[in-house]
Image 1 (cartoon, helix red, strand yellow):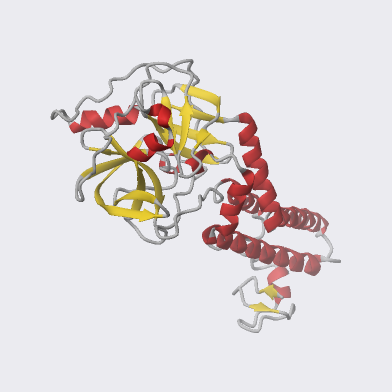
Image 2: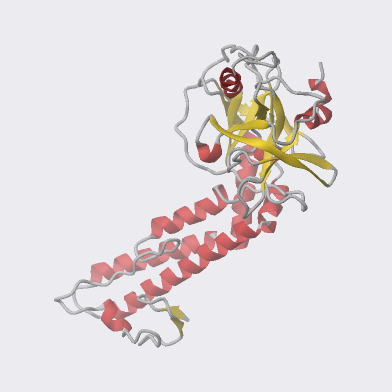
Length: 373
C-alpha cells in the first residue's frame, strides 16, 4: 500500500492514482518547463525532506507527550507537562527573603497579595518535562504534584501506555512517517538509471535511512524504553527548582505521598518566600481564585476564575475551578484574593474548557505531618 503524493489516496498500484488519475512517474520526473513537484507536509504530517520534523516527533513523544499522571476515573486526565525549552536562569546560592503577603485577610491590596504568591511559586524542571510548585512555609518546603517529579519508571511508562491521547499521537506520527518513506522510496525507484541523478539518489537513500531510524524510535517498545531511560536519569540526577528572582537549586529529590498525587521538596535554604495556607476552611462556590504556575513553560503566569464546585473520587477531594489550568501548571498554587493557598492545581478535564481541579491544601498537611507547626 502507498499514498498518492498528490491527493493522498491509499492504493496498491504504484503506477497511476485511481482517485486523481495522475501518473506517479510524471510527478517524479516532470518536463523541463515545469517545476519539480515536492509533496508539502500536511498540518500534522511528514513530507519529503522533513527528517528533522520526524526526529522532533520522536523526541516529543518521549519528552513532551508522555507526562500524564493516572487520573481519578470520575474526574478525568491530569495536566501534562509541556516540555518547552526555557533559557536557563542564573544559578544563585540562596533565596532572598520576600514579604509573605502584602495584602492579607485584613483587607490589603489583592494585587500585592498575588505578587507575593508569585514570588513563592517555582518552576520545576525534571529530565522529562516542566511543572510548578510553591513554598508552603518559612522552612523552605516546596509542595508539588507527585506526577511532576515521579521517579518510578514503571509507573510513568504505564501511565503513558494507558493514555489515549498519547497513543493516538504516536500512531499518527508513525503513519505519517511510513507515508513519507513510501513517497521517498517511489521517487528513488523512478530516478534509478536516469543520468545526472546520482547525487539526488544518494540524498534520497540517506533520507530514507534516517526516516527508518526515526520510525524505529516510535515503536511502542522503544518509546517505553526511552521513557524509562529518561525517568531513571532523572532519578539519578535529581531535578531543579527555580524562583522568579532567579534563585536556582539543582540535584533535588522529593518525598512522595504514597496515596495521593502530592510530593514535598525540602530546599537547602533559609527564609524562603512562602504562601500562607488557608487551613481548615472551605472556599465558597463563586469565590474568586487565581491559579499560578508555568503553563507551557511561560513562567510566573497568573489566571483568574472562581470556585465552581467540589468533587470527590477514589477517596480524594478536589476543588473545581474555571481558572485556566494548562500543561505546566501542575503542582502550582490555587490562591484566594488574600494570597492564601487553598489548593494544588492538579488536573483538567480532557476535551472540555474551563474545568480544572485542585487538591485542597489540607490534604498536603495530612500527607506530610512534619509540615504541621
